[in-house]
Length: 498
Image (cartoon, rainbow, N blue to C red; front, side, top):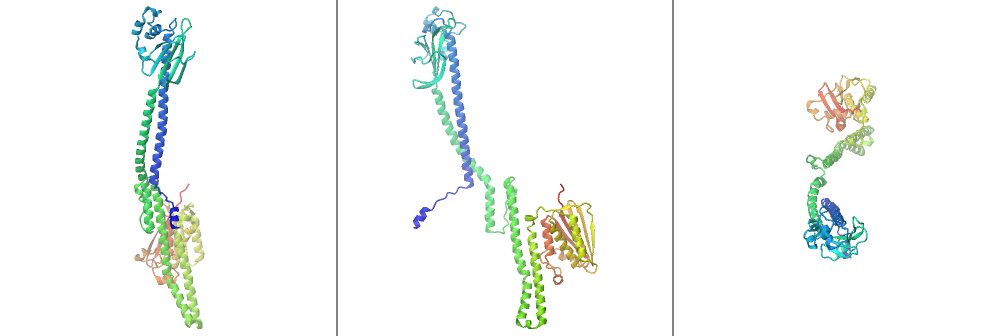
């Protein structure tokens, strides 16, 4: 049974992208060479054949024009006479010279007719052979009209040209002329061309395989780097390995930038998740321990004492309320890092949102004096989700109210500068020491832990505000003096005007 299963297993051959690229490139080059060679071969042969057809036509025309001068039926004597001289030196009577004299005067034209591939035959009116340039003894294959065709004669393929000869003066048929041009040399050219094409195809395959392999390795190198980085990240999700996009200036560079940005975002989410779990386990330990202590107290003997029962229930409910607030703030902080997934292109009306939050605080805290300094003449759109802008303002204004001392006055000013919305919130409260300024935006950091816990703070508000501002490519800083107050300055990018 095991052997049968092993026999049924199929062997899968895996071919890499580089190998596929090389083979496809070679195949493409081979097909191109074959198509080009075939077209070249056909055009070359057709051109050679057409040239030979034209030459035999001209030769036939020249021979017939010389023989048409004769007034008598063609014979070896007058044929040699009329072919041996040009038209300007021809006499009217070829009998003035002997046959031997005419043959001696055979000129270059006869030499041209004597080329190895060409045979010329002249016949009298009864189609009897009277003259030929080669000892072929061919019969007349033509008819009573001029013809040029490709035929096989004595096992050889060539052009056969035939024409009846009529006397130019008398108009009587005086004979026939027949030319046969052997195309065997063209067959030799064909064989040479085919051999050349085969060698060229073989050479092209070798060169294309070599260059295809080199080019595929060159273009696949960035992909291999991405694969290596992915494998490294797979082994260690927190690795700092990234694509070296500086080396490339093409589509792979764009892919590398997107890939690196995606990995940075994923690692940021992982870190946020890990930090969220760690913070939750750390911050919830105290309220859980408090609630557990009160429940144990009640379980032992406190439930029979109304005063202790009321105190334990009140403390437990207070800790549960703080736990609920803490979890909500931590969820807000976690979501603040994912803004670019949901609100990347959102914009808000700066004046409208700020005025609305300002009016809400004036209504909620009538014993405070809120001053709004608005230097924006015309409404401006800021690149931030409306709810997040409200949340940032509420966090800072709420802290200003909580930590105010005797002077219950809060200043809120807005302006624009260098395509940024500038917001300043100033209070005259407790202030922050110089040592604490560097850590005031850290998670769960409290300047005075006992006093902050008493006022309901978890140390997450400013962390949420900073995360929101920086996610929208803004900036937030704080200036403070102990017992004098603090100023929070926020910069957020304005939307480009169309």
